[in-house]
Length: 351
Ligand code: IPM
Ligand code: MG
Image (cartoon, rainbow, N blue to C red):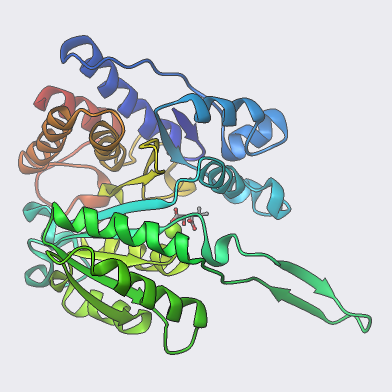
């Protein structure tokens, strides 16, 4: 358990309470350790990803991470920024498959920035490639020419095996959902994603039970805010997935509700709320812990082989929402406004 920065430790504390109850009363066999990551690790040890944390992560079946980053560390060089802690774990453990579900709870449809009738019943899954693409491509950097002019550069590169494995993940996810995959690229401009489109199409032939479509990323962004329910599974590159998953999150009414899983081929996973460290509300006890609680459910499902317990946690969350409990981010003037700990307790009670 890596709380990280900002509201990270507060929401992870609620997850910890839940896991302790699942262990004590519901037969979950798990041991937890805590570690430092991000700005908190930098302050304590001078690096956002201490060797000890990386070792803990490697040995764990699953990692639960709160959030990293904040204004205090924004001026640091790239290698020391909190984000490197997160990216370092993703890379070191080869957590290439990032699953980001976006679903609307009926009671929260009005909290969406779109009209409720457009988002009611929304249930889509973004499968984001997480360890390749422009985030990790070399060469990268900022160079200075002899005349003093500077150039910043990054490399967008995808190998066939990288595309193939994330495509397989997407089709496998689709097989247990609506069996529709939409691959998002920019194949009209970028060769790397022309290959992406080709390889996804080839892989698709192995999944004749699934329907495959392709969209350019600009159109996909538009479709997401136009008619988001047309999507089942979206598979896309690291950077497009970063952007589109924030859009999808907002459709549901609050980024405070969305969990994520980042998996490698061994079933090891890192689980995180999609929201960030929210420094503006850190320490106030008002952050929404449900994204982290739902991340625990994904962890039970994808890394710990506890699908039945995962279902119970998902149902407990649906129940507290239906009962009218609302943290500030999802409060619409109805129901009862509660803080982080009270929301966490309510989920446990609903179990
Ligand atoms: C995310 C975040 C990260 C990313 C940042 C914090 C490095 O935005 O998980 O979506 O860009 O991948
Ligand atoms: Mg992001």
